[in-house]
Length: 461
Image (tube, rainbow, N blue to C red):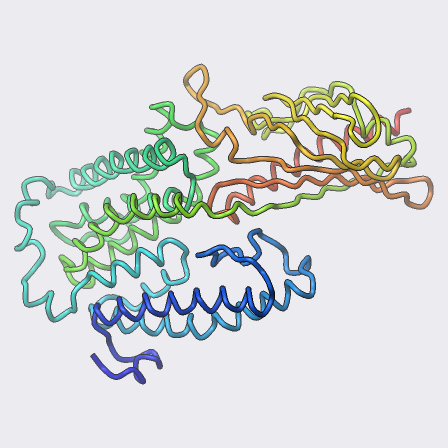
């Protein structure tokens, strides 16, 4: 091991024991600094291990107040030197293990960076691995189980990872009731890596064929989840882009490990890490239960009518025509009509969707300017497409929840009105920023369906 100065300039190497001790001490020190800074300097209560949402929610920078902005700048300023040290230590450990330095990019990928840390703590130095001899010579017992042919080895890799994928998905969704980083990041990465590792066990393969094998595994998993009535087509299609990208990353990782030194001495460590680390990581993630962020979606239309004319159609409206949008025809819940009992704060609005009704107690009644409400009851967000009569995966119950909403009517010149609809919601699916893309789009389309109908009804009067 070289001295600390070369290591912290991005050169040199470091043993796995020193890497382990350094990583644990730095993480503890960084967590203590974050908590101390937040509590002592900014008088804030913080959750342990809350690295991704310092404010316990996802917020736009433009929406931060002066105090929040100063707090964020302080947290970022403290994090910068730790990021630099972490990257340098990772590069040094990769260099000591004889692994490609580009693997340090995983340092910036949540959940995978934890697996990378554990992996680098386990993989031996390049010299020690060479002294123990080739991987195939040390694991000849696998020869009889892994076919040598191109098609046969690809099939073996795909089928084994399919079984493991079904096992891990069932563990996360059924046993833990968790839809987190381990499920959506760890599982597809594991499938891509293991399928390509098995495919390349006896001899190196081309990069293009490895990519094909890596993509085959999550596709088969999706078909398996559909066949066993675990998931429906809509959610599988939503998860597919993320799963494919992570499977490609895992497959590329396995390819480069095998091509750099075939068979790679690091492969058993990575396989053990994924098979043991994934369920452990899922369990820890479920135990920590990070607070789901609250998002807001606002949609607006301009209407050729004054607010007084729009107001009766805002508080309640008759049955809307059947939807023409593909999104709603595919099974995503859509609004049908709205009813209200009472008037003023305390009245209860009932917005009926295709999957059930939202119960919306009115909190602000400022006719004809603002109608604001909380949400006391949420129906299912969609009706899944499935070969079976119906399925009820756990994520349809309480994983996408509306917290409240409002209609704001702003008068414009010429007797026109800017009609805005806003929904505040949260979901317990991670990575939150990925699933936010889908949920924001769905809520925006729901808003447009209602706002356009209100506009049409008001103009026709």
